Image 1 (cartoon, helix red, strand yellow):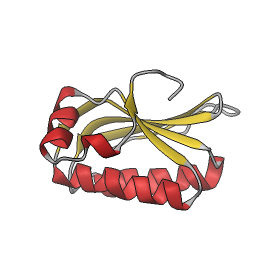
Image 2 (image 1 turned 45 degrees about the horizontal axis):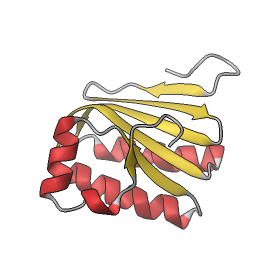
Image 3 (image 1 turned 180 degrees about the vertical axis):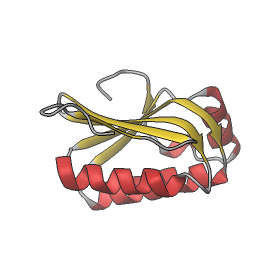
Length: 122
């Protein structure tokens, strides 16, 4: 369902995944809530591409604090997002990954290649 007219916030509903987009100063934040697995990562990839096209941010932040399931497909999605964002001349940061996201990223050995923080301006 789209945000209010003139709003910088929109949501993409999915039974397993909810994506919200908002502008926070010079940063665009995509809030990811629910499950990131093979069935849902295409929606995230589409939202990232659409957000880059629509808003052209210098920094795109994925807020992962509300992710409750995270599979290897989620790792692939984050690696693909990193490439997509960099190819557009922007910078990707991850915000406050949930415990499951942090654990799977650490086990997959990819936690060190992402800029991860909990500051809303990241």
